[in-house]
Amino acid sequence: MGDLPGVTSRLKYLKELGVDAVWLSPFYRSPQADAGYDVSDYRDVDPSFGTLTDFDEMLSTAHALGLRIIVDLVPNHTSDEHAWFIEAKAAAPGSAARERYIFRDGKGEDGELPPNNWQSIFGGNAWTRLVEADGSGGQWYLHLFDTKQPDLNWQNPEVRAEMESVIRFWLDRGVDGFRVDVAHGMIKAEGLPDWDGVASMVEGEHSEEEAAKERAMNPPSPFFDQEGVHEIYRAWNKVLKEYEGDRMLVAEAWVEPAERLVRYIRPDEMQQAFNFEFLLAGWDAERMTTAIDNSLAAVEEVGAPSTWVMSNHDTVRHTSRYGLSVPTSFPTGISQSDEQPDEALGLSRGRAAAAIMLALPGSAYIYQGDELGLPEHTTLASEFRQDPAFARTKGAETGRDGCRVPLPWFGQEASYGFSHGSVSPGQPWLPQPESFARYAADLQNGDAASTLELYRDALALRQEHRLGDGAVGWSALHDPAAGVLAFANNGVLVVTNFGDQPVRLPDGLLEELTVKLRSQPTALADTGESTAPACASELAPNSTIWLA
Ligand code: NOJ
Image 1: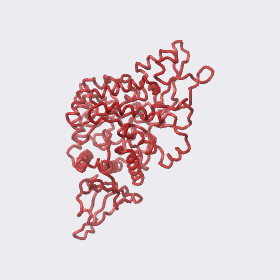
Image 2: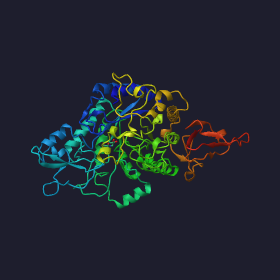
Image 3: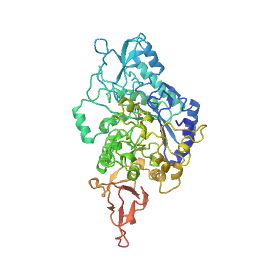
Image 4: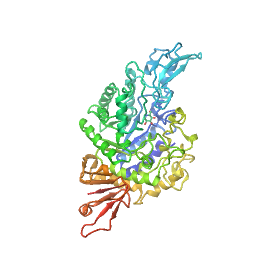
């Protein structure tokens, strides 16, 4: 599975990569119905990942290396195997135990119909009916996600107090912050009104224009981005302030447009929110320009830093998305019967895009394996799929397993070294494709042309030039309609060619400025038309350079 001692053993690798902090997805006790986003005990480590002692060891090793640790907090729902839900099932309708969740009587003569028409984000009904001890149908409970993830009732003060106590538990242990899962979902509209819209976790299957049209046509969802959520974050902000140091909250909130999203990072709420507009822009100079402009303008309103991310555990890896015939498309997964991405093209674009992201002000989030240029596993056999969305949609949604396949550490070892050093190395929890041998970290280490060394160089330069604290100034070279993105940040000029033809750079540019980074060794070429002393150069297709 990969466990906490394993994380500890790789912290040095992350330090050498050049990151400042690590966000860990949930490692709490859980039946693993949704990769740990179904927590049965918020104050313990799942035995498959280790113990609380292993956690403390991991945290102190990270801190000794100067790395911060951010843990995942899952406040919208618990596991159905959480003590509270077990108690609620056994308790009577209307009891205090049931009031911690969202239980309702069904509609119809015998309550045989769900209380409203909400659909689960993973597909199917968002309500499940309890079966009473005598076999008769009981009340229904709400689960925006899987049936094994009952939603908590955030109108209940007991729920708020409990989650604050969970936050304190981990702050007391020394964590630096929390990534807040479904941060836009905890409060549901009064009366749980029917809603005919379709919500997806990853709101990206459409273009910005379509999204705007949809927003105009659909009344806002009664379970996402309700005003009431902000009160919760104001309370948590106060809790964090009681602690020493620089603790933070980052929202996972699929909220559009950027002006709505930044309401989560007003000065008395969270510190950061994932900026999914950048992730959804795909490989397209105009869309990326808009995402950068929108994001920077919106955060300025609230005085928070922007964030940037291209992939995570819920999305198809960007290297594979960028290799599709439509490099702005956003599939929910890729299977054997779907179009297969052009791996080499996707990788060049992925590297060029990373060189954009890592030059932007604010915080950049790298998903594990991005730094190796890992592609999605696009031919994973159905029998291995574990994402509840795959099962609940009967395969209509391929699901997220393809981006979660364990990393290749050593190209020549069994499981590419994923279970290196474990007592019984065996099959990893998701099988790795053969192509992973080419991406193994040990092969890339020290190879100046590798993706790993590109990330290391970019992160070191980011630090040296304090790009995180800088600002974007579009350069005279910036011409998104022609597929050229160019900006300066703290004295570093970043130029990307999104097209499939070389772009000629202004004569003399390379005499004036030094090349600090190229997204691939062949990013720059002499046009052969040089007239000394100025040489004429061009930027290769799907490439980024940094000059200073
Ligand atoms: C968002 C998480 O990133 C995702 O992996 C999970 O399935 C849902 N929230 C439900 O917790």
